[in-house]
Image (cartoon, rainbow, N blue to C red; front, side, top):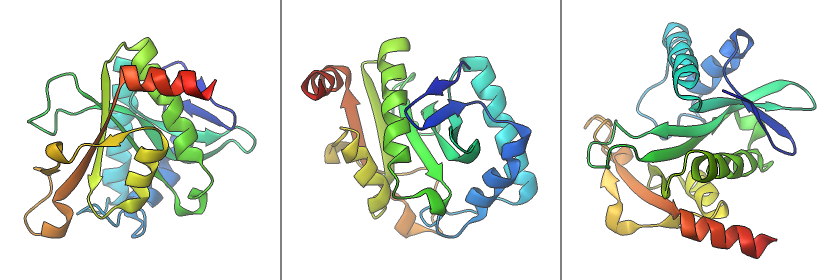
Length: 190
């Protein structure tokens, strides 16, 4: 993956120095509030390796987000496939993120997500990018709205990967952004 630069961030593939942060965000109760699992260190190490390999293979994925000024990894933002959601058409791209809590509220996710939307529409040529989160996860849905995505309640769903032991985490709100709407937003911003 060729790193993507924004005003304050570098979006890049994972490095060994990111392992501690990746474990921390995947085991933190606040970060993982809307997930039915917490990763052990071994599980986090395996997942970061899988994500790194995926990025090397495809050229994109849930990539590390690093603050340029400090070289500090703050979490991840990126695009990934939606094979884990069986009713979505093959090739559908999801935009997603996860940051350490001390970096919340600084606009980092919105900044990085806008760069990934540009990549998805301009470089990859997609006509739609989607995102979804537990219906009660207002932090994530607020980001979706800030980056120009629109709620589509007709596509809300119960996530098939969430175990029935966590019924409050199953209902997911669905958001999407079409290329034509993204282009209009870009024109209006200029």
